[in-house]
Length: 247
Image 1: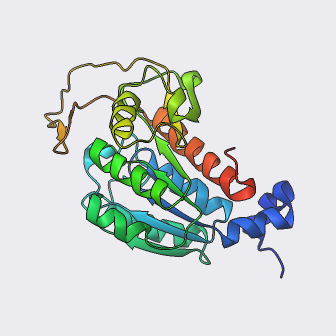
Image 2 (image 1 turned 90 degrees about the horizontal axis):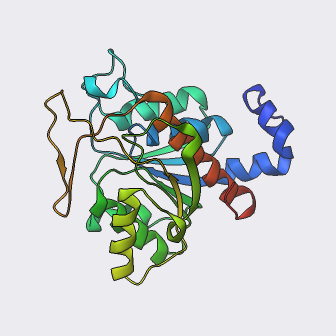
């Protein structure tokens, strides 16, 4: 089979076997905001053959400063619908499945109850993030989890490692605490920053996020920082696909 020109540079880098592994891979991306939108973009452009997209939210004007799918023309549209259309435009051969729902215990079971190679967790909610990680671990599905990207500016302090290695990040600390109660201490690949978050007061009137377990304050964020989190998460996922290890 001839490689389409759109994938030629990827094949040049990874070889035909590597490209075929990406074509045959299935990645589920949970959360299509500032981090998840860039993760989905990178995976689609890399030639991943199956992508499952999970997000219940719509694009808002306040998303435009950092989210790939947020444009003046897409405000009010479902993020999952915008993402699906963009991915099909990038790679028409990509098989896209959409779950327009919130991540909780019930929906997580449904989402993960299919063969897949890796899950990318780009969720803000602590309880949803923990539900997803626990369910993925129970099914032996590799997961790459994004920790807190808001309130940061220094791209040089973004790193990756096992959940047991994370430090400074308050979200990672909360996730670790919740996972420990479930008997999980390691085996979760994370993208995180060692930069303390800047907690400047919100001037937009946005309300803090309450997921029933934790009230998350509204933190400022900037385009390049959250994008790097998403791209790095995609790189980790591709590493799992190519050789069973994170990139």
